[in-house]
Length: 222
Image 1: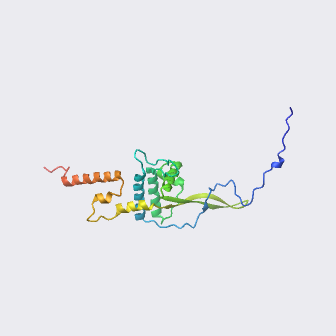
Image 2: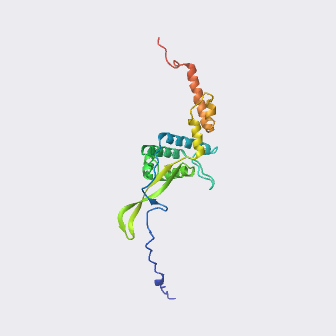
Image 3: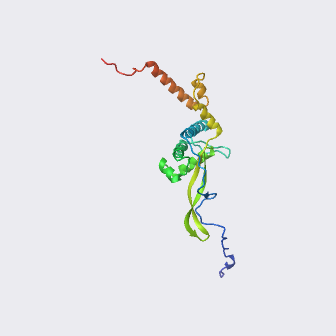
């Protein structure tokens, strides 16, 4: 049997339209960098967001589970790991120093926290699922001309810190000034049980040191 070659000349590739860009390193839904409406973030606001995050993380953790557990289904936001809280602390520090401007690269964050890039991406996703972080992908022009105009490349994201209303309200109760008619237990009622137990232990230890007096543990002169 003799093999006969098949003619594929009729299957020539259609020319690419001028309005389409292919082989581009820019990720989907990216927007041009610049024009961000940065809102200054004070240290008091940043401290409130971090406290709200810690309280929310303790409330979300299920009994017997470690921190940062993955979502079980589409309705589950999963947990918040200690690494995500560390990332939030870095972001708050940057935002408070730079007037709310928050655009660090993932590589810079990974180097600052001494972790791989995938950890930064995972922690960002945790904060976003729980409503503490949002970002916008961006691109910048390279200044080089291509076949269909200026070439562009991906740049760092623009980030915004925020917090759910319920978490902020819980943090406000903890930070509220103490009134004469309120006791510690009333102020601690909005905090997770683990935090309440730790505060009670600290209070009891301080009371014992107060009972022994300032000379406790010191050697008396002969």
